[in-house]
Image (cartoon, rainbow, N blue to C red; front, side, top):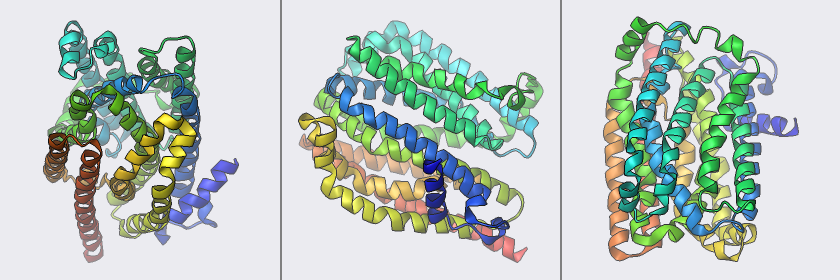
Length: 447
């Protein structure tokens, strides 16, 4: 409860809620702050569990074990995006629940097709592993269909929860996934299963967590879920075709861009160096992404509702970004000086380089944390086509940065150029989001 109350205060501080949403006494009682606090508090506890086990994990597993895990997850992440064909992002938008359920069914059909395709690749696991100069990958490739299918299901179910404001269930998933992942990694490592213990844990934990999140009271929420209307599935698939046409390619390009360092640098610098880099991302990017996703989910649901109701959205979205910047800039400045020491103390002497790598990524991490929580703006206003074009530019710049570093055989320079290129594009996205939001608010004022 103390954590929950703390994050009520935190959420109130970073969210400048428009007065029309604050019609009851006390900022802590507003729905937006309450839901944000619930997700943030659960996510921070979940992330804390994950981080607390790393001082043990880094003393059980080797850097190349983590490198193999990051390679597996980078490849699988692209498959996860394809698994729902982008339709999972549309589940929040329909005004009636029946069409939302049909979108969930469309996601399920796409996920089954993706899993079938991945099963067909299992006989070719050795040639696939040889592309990345990582022969160990072939041994665990058979888990890829389960990994992609499990996380694809969660993407769809997560947005279904968001639509029904079932944020407590999202919190249950986050907590369960973190505990199961940490516990299985420790258990398999202690049992001496070092080669694939990290990968096996990363596959079974999310699948089990989905089941746990659906258990309590799931009958009410999913009461009509098995009433499949194929005709309506076709209708909603056509109505929201912008998502597979533009959102899916955009998400794929974004995922590819995010995983480019692992995919391109592994054959050049090896699994050990990628293991250190992967740990740097684990300690920096992934905790931020969990917090970003918590706020994103609440803001997305609220913004979509406001747009459907013909209300303005600029005040609370701009207020959120402004207050987030005021909080994060001094925090990141402090982190720059203490990161190498922190990672050395946390993980051991051999892992000090992780803190040095995080320092190089700070410009990207800072601007991403401010802007990413409002990235749903393109979906709300149907601007997926333009967003896809921006994503292509984003990826091209990132590839260019990585290729320069690879040509110079300088790993640190590669990471710095990658971070600066990423930050520059996100600033451009922020300006575009501001234009779309102001245009919407002006149309409400003029009508």
